[in-house]
Image (cartoon, rainbow, N blue to C red; front, side):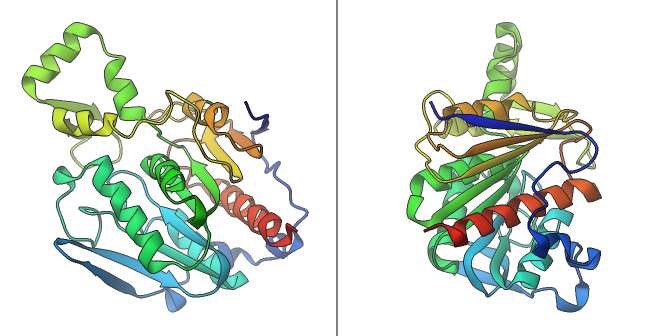
Length: 290
């Protein structure tokens, strides 16, 4: 099994700040500037919902942001990454999965398999060359699936509160009687601070389909550099999932970065800086490799 480097970040940023080009960036480059924001475009697919996306053209490696469940491409992390990539001249793409944000389709009809296909379509049709995939929560699961399916398009992975297998694992951890009751009901409701209703609802069909995409039961055939950032105060996705991902990927280059006060969304100013510094260090590594 590959060796894993563990970094614990409590208050400051213990990540390598040796890269002066990021340290020297003005703070406004780490925030979305509406004057230069990319425009929304739509990708038409035969017999499939249109996907909304925003793209900045630039050099390789490019960066692709994969948002979380129920989220969209207009979050703080996604917008900060666009400004970062624009400032350094690297290509960048963010998009909404089927049933999310400005894309067509209904969220309730979505599955992990459908969203995986969305990611693969974006990689195949809307990007050029290898990409650094940055996945938040569900996006951290989807980035693993994409890297397995498209190794030639994956330069590196950055997971933020990665939720690999999480819904399936959480459901299977419930007492047997509870699971039977939920299966009879046909629906599982999970409390959430991130929706107006205060909960997420998942059908049994959704969970059964998701089982087909679980990755943590065996070694994960990913060999590119992997960085996993997780908050110890994440109440939605346990941080030990990132540890499990790190243990199972075959890559020899894996770092885990734990934030003592980090929560699930990792959207505080220092969280976003840490994400940007991590990605910049990877890009520097990838562009200087012989």
